[in-house]
Image (tube, rainbow, N blue to C red; front, side, top):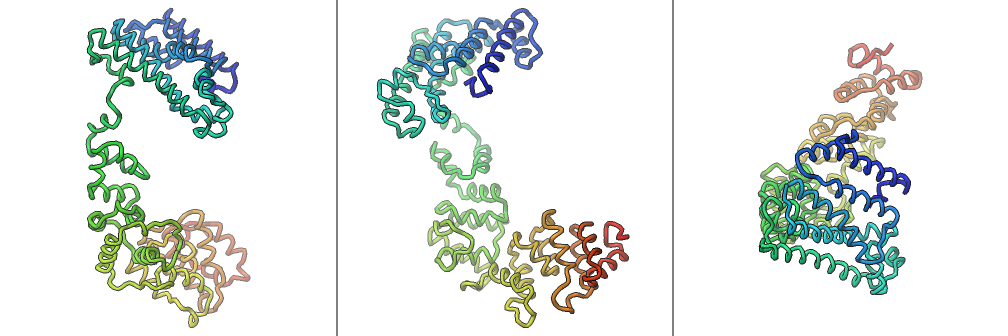
Length: 477
């Protein structure tokens, strides 16, 4: 509706007057410099576009600003005739199809189209305190507007009112088809007029989509968060979705190789043994940590960070096959509570200030996890790099890139005065920073280290070493 696109009624009236003047200018060969007006003027040079229909549409939209609702179905029908039907008349004129039969059919199609559009938008209009069903219909079924605005489809009588309104729309559609038949067209619209009458076609959207190429359907599937509802609209779509290659390709394309297995495990019966085979042979990444988390989750051993049903929706036979593939890849996998790679990594971070002889998880253990099992623990790498810069090569192998929001934090941590003297040697700090500088470096941290030169001798000495060796991308002095 027009009022949805203007801030107040006065602005709407001004727009309507602009279009009245534009229609007049188009008719006189002097259109305003507006893209739509210029396009209409150009079209009028090649086809008979009646200015009467254009003016009729503008007048109807202007009246809509004053009375957005209708008391009777008759007044709403007249409004639909002036808007949607008039638009179809103009399209027939563009196609040079001056047929009274087609015009009469277009009149009823336009009315049916308006009624249908209002019904589809009923929740939107109700949320804006507007009742688009004529008052005589709502009153007949005892519908109270305030109840519709407040309770929506649960309001008393609204279902009956919607049904009667939809019946009126269907009656106009049937009348249009009867007119085509009586006009000697035997209910068939001429090929040239099909674009105009497509809204009244018997062909359902699902049947139209049956002619779409499989490649296009796959592209549509790949863009959907959940393609399941789409598979229910036609037998062809359902049959297409049963192909294990289609399912595997969806997970790989939609989520990427690193996350395909994780999301596939959460899709229940959609995941089959064949889909797993295709995922693995097509490059989907499987980390040992993901296997451990899935085992804990499936058998209620440990909840980890997952709160949904996730892998528990996968059939037992498929999950056993998944574990078989996991064993073939990694052999015997630690499965106990707290023995998973993620728990070990978290413990390693927590014990960063603990003396070496008291640590329960060593640097060598973490290095083995990242080097051998490729666990993508990306979220914790910035903190891990600050604690243990030797993780950098493995972080990069796992896809880590220095994020600007973590950059200063990581560099600053590396220059901080550590707890033990052996770790505070400037040479060690300089070596670690050189490794990290392969990703990025910052002036801010260098300035902070200089300001703390007296209390952080090791850090300042390391900074000077980096300056002399040319590893800083700026001059220290």
